[in-house]
Image (tube, rainbow, N blue to C red; front, side, top):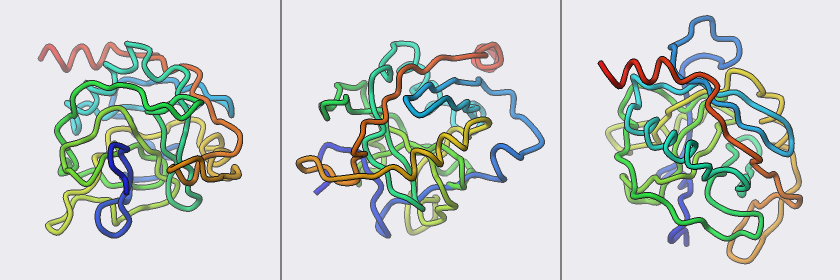
Length: 203
């Protein structure tokens, strides 16, 4: 059913969470901050370089290549998550880099406002697609029964934009369900601060 399209598998393999309330969190990890500009507004995310080093490196490689520019949030499920980073507005899936190792066992949870990598039912199959949890999705966390979905970032500004996207009307487009009726375009993704990431990489 989900073939080549990375998705979140209900009860069998998909849910999302992170520690604390993103925008209200007091401390900062010092990870890179990335600006995601969308047709609904901007959001800033902080990357967890220490907890998910390979995942963050993979995500930044796509960012630096301009891969996400012009892609869409193609799957929106209220009270669950919003997913994007793989399809064009014409619902054409973009070619990706090789899959990255799943770092879901990093101690982070799929809490409201966290970002995690989407994947197929294969544990280590994540490429470019990611999702933003709009609720605490405990079922997506790493456990002895389920490997889970790797949390690698959190929204630090712009949860109002996430909420606006969550509420859009959706429809079916071919084999794809929960597609926004009006395209939610990721116009650009840019690194605002990368110094701390470079420092950690050299150490």
